[in-house]
Length: 138
Image 1 (cartoon, helix red, strand yellow):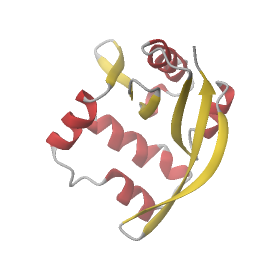
Image 2: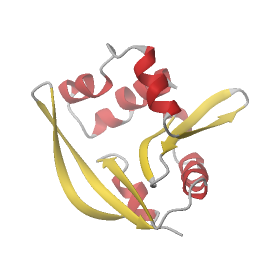
Image 3: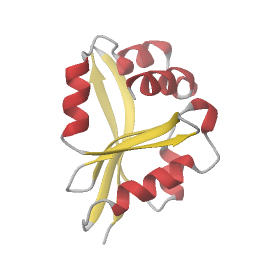
């Protein structure tokens, strides 16, 4: 999952972010315990096709989608749509929220999420733009 995250950001998100922003975003110095903790504190799901992990995401009990990534070679074929459906049906919540990248913004809009606000995130003195988004839940 970690490698899928790195690969997606470095190959897909690079279209909307600078190389400096991508390097700060992937932060390859994070240890595996950081990732394990992040996945274990949420409902984490993955989608595989023929033993290849093609997407993963996680959501907490309040409906916050923390991570949402689709393999660079499997974009545009419904993997993200199926993954979002799995995440949203895994929790009963009045609303879903996420902090969407520029790259995923239209995907979430097409899935009935609304922009609450544009955000500027500062990591290691580098600014990244993302969007706080929400969707009505159950």
